[in-house]
Image (cartoon, rainbow, N blue to C red; front, side, top):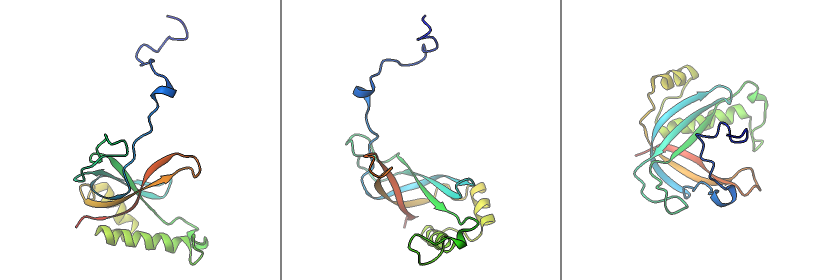
Length: 162
């Protein structure tokens, strides 16, 4: 075996990027039913990350072959950081602290969950109390980075299923 191929015996080296590349299919924009399967606190980014498995929707992704049900999407709540009270929000009408608290309150109300304090949030995540919640997620499509021609799904809103 030559030095070039040493260590490749467990790899599938029969590929051609130009011929074999296939962009991941996208979920069409719309509202979808799903179940919360994971919730994590990300201290570094200051967020609560919700993973949802779509279920009970039917239909296919943009390739016309991949089922929507079984797909996983993420929703993130951004928590206030130190200093946010001194930073203007995007509209300039208030500060980032108030905007993040207001968005978290609206989300908690829409989801019908208690997110009153950080200790309560962390305890609920640790207990897995939000796992299994049935939700309706508003899925969109965005280009990231802007102007790149690369598109992905994003979750614009999430609420408890009725």
